[in-house]
Length: 75
Ligand SMILES: [Zn+2]
Image (cartoon, rainbow, N blue to C red; front, side, top):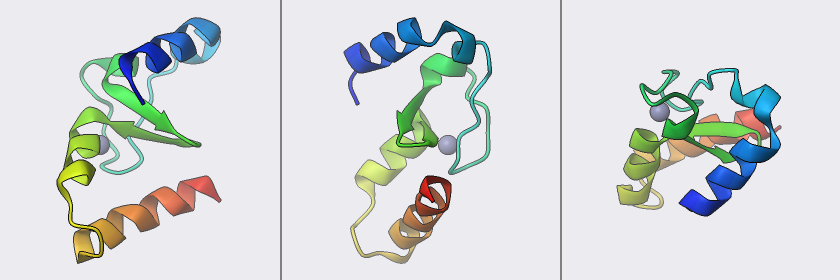
């Protein structure tokens, strides 16, 4: 998701934007608040975790672990 899409979402959901999102991967509220997370389906992922996922090798145990967490949120 790029910066433009985040801004669009932010603008269309002012009510929801008041709620600080919790990253579904690390369980932390990003210091930047709503601007520090991206929405993937129903899951929130902070920038730190997003970068971590981007560097993970597909098929590695860590990758599987994170994907399982995301899948749980999506169900
Ligand atoms: Zn995170």
